[in-house]
Image (cartoon, rainbow, N blue to C red):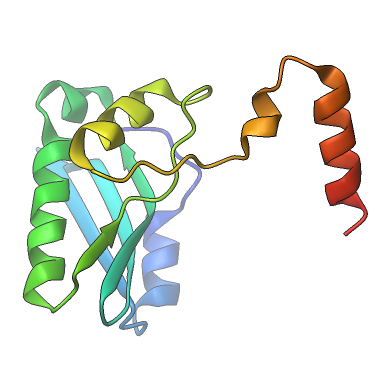
Length: 131
């Protein structure tokens, strides 16, 4: 089993009638080792939640599961499968995975967050805080 903050059963019950959500769950010996929730629209599917445990990653389950999700999206007419943003500084493993399967890498956070200058970080945060 893997640790995550999403109560999948509760979320599934709340979203059971939402045709815009696609749930994918991979199990080993009855235990979930990967969970994916994607939002579906006519031409685009977007991952908004994916979690897997170490066992799943050892067996390359995330790659196969993503491939299956892309196949299903294509069958339903989608031309874009959006993996979401990438945070290379704080989530290197996800960065490497997503960068390995896409032509178009998008960073999840603005670059100023990683500025070496605390002045730049503080000014940018102050400006955004006034909005």
